[in-house]
Structure formats: structure tokens, C-alpha cells
Length: 257
Image (cartoon, rainbow, N blue to C red; front, side, top):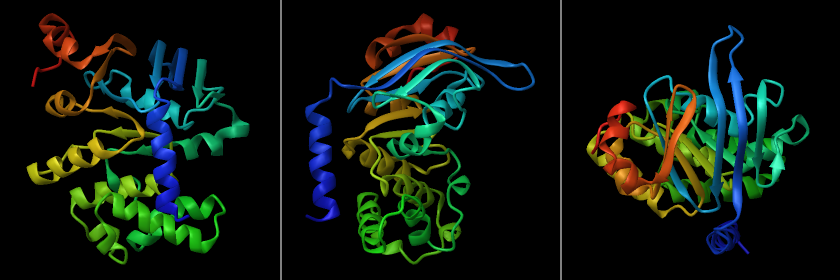
């Protein structure tokens, strides 16, 4: 069975068990070393296969929350708990958690650092200890998923911003994560690249959490929206209900699409 076929089987299983909780955040509090409190008693559950938008004003704590899901902030950096795929985040299972949660940064240049697209996308699988032939298959599959197969030998930093964002997504897809976490994926994209990104995310079967200020993207792609402000989750519900609540949107600095 090829890598693509194995991934297809796993993705069909994801859809079939969509009621399983894959992210569980409980009573999470966090302050930076300067004492500034960023997260206050955050509680969040996400089920397998959900596509969830995370919105709110700058400084609301969205990015800090997302970094916790990937273990960038460790278990001793705050109070509360984070569980991914039923496992509590611990130093001992950090590598496994990071393989399950693919984090895509807002600026793809923070993620692309190798001489070629192939080397960028192969970085994760190589550090998972996979054999070379399997790495090549997974890189080819990941680039195919984002429509970048013809760019395998290109220099990453010579690509357009939209192309870089696709390659950045491929760098996490190559590890076949269960969950994709993206920070402002549509920022800086022209209309064509933005539409291409929306179509790409729509077709993916992974659980997806996206932090964004792009409320048109939210309305079009995400059935569920979580609103954060001042380090707290202030609303969590269907996107249509959130967007129809004019008072809620105004209070937390959000514009209706």
C-alpha cells in the first residue's frame, strides 16, 4: 500500500469517528516571565474532523493558546491541562504530540529554512527517523496535496507568499498530523491565492483550528467559531449565530463579513 493509500484510509477513519475529542484544554492559565497574564481559565474541546475558527482582537491570547497545543509552552509554564489525542501534554510525549499537531505559522519564512522545497518538507519525516524512501513518498504526497509537486527542487525563499504558505502547510502534512493549527493563513494573500487556500482547507479531512481576522474566511469555511478577548473565551458556538450577534461582534472588535 502506498503512502497516499495509507493516508486515505486514515483520513476516512477520521471522518467516521468525528465525535471523538482530540483536543481538550482545561482551566488553562498562562503568564509570560514579565508577569503579563495572557490566558485566564481557558476551556476548549475540539472533536475529530471539526473545522474551528479562533477569532478576537490583537492581544486576545489566540496565538499563545495555539502554541500550547503544540507543546511550545511546556507543562510547567502555566496552570491547567492540555490533552491531545487523549494524552496529557508531558515532556515525555512532547515529540509524539508535535507529530499529531501540525502548527503553521503566520509568516511562512519562520517555517521554511532549507535550501529547497524538498528539504523543507522532508525535515519533519527525517527527524521522525523514517527511512529515506518513505520520506520521499511522504514529501511527494504532501506536495501533491497542496498543489506544489512541480516545485520540489525550487528555492523556498524565491516563491511568492501564497506558494510559501502552501509549502509551509506541506511541511506539516508530510508528518501526517491528526490536527492542523494555522495562524492567520490568509494574511498577505492576493484574491487568487486566498481562494486557492480556502479550497485547499475545505478539502482537508484533518481537524483544523485557524486563528484569523479574515471574517469572510470564517463565514465561508468554518461551522464553529470561538471568540477570545483579554485571554478568555467569551463565546463558542455556530459561526452563523456568532456572526448574527451584532452586540457580541462589536464588543469584541469584530467586523461582520
